[in-house]
Image (cartoon, rainbow, N blue to C red; front, side):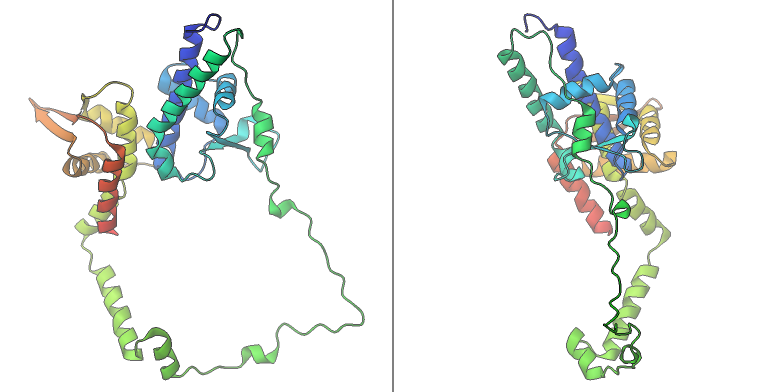
Length: 304
């Protein structure tokens, strides 16, 4: 409780932070590029049913300055709506998704600490996004001036296309065997075996590998959907499939989402798919992200 700043405003900042974190995880579940900040805030607003703008994000940046890496788009440096956002550059995306709960705890601690130490201030300060972004801006190498070397009139440059570069160098079988530890015949047989193994995969095996590649992003989406309310929780299979398809940046078939969810049901003990009276639900008892992601990665490696 703060004597001046309202509880509603504090809750709004907390909700804004949680929505931004959730949308970032959803984004990286189906994308490899960093999102445009303005678009991410719009998506977070829809996610939380709460308008989240640059002013709210600037307060968050003030409270936890090292939580995000904000930088300008190289094509239009001065366009505020083309700033991009990512986790801190030293944190891998997988590590970021695993640390959501820890980050939420750290943020709550930061805001409580600031409120306790600033009882006489009627507002939480903010930082300028432009200042933060420009501090992280590095001029692209393509635009940097190149130093031209003027040829010396007294020095003859050696021709690059020297005849010695085009002489055929014979490699003996003994030299090749020494390098690889295999004879020519063994190397040929090894390549044929590898080629045959790649071509021997059945359509079902190829499909199973494809579904294994969808386990992680679909799990992340399921995790974010369930993080809004306490567990255990039952979700309509039909609605969940629609949410997953909407979250992907490329088309994914209903059957593929359904098969991915059934595969998650197989490997995660806390998840089950129940059909009763013609209605199918996905029942989530609990989440243990570290354990769940280890199981998912094990399946992915088996399919590599």
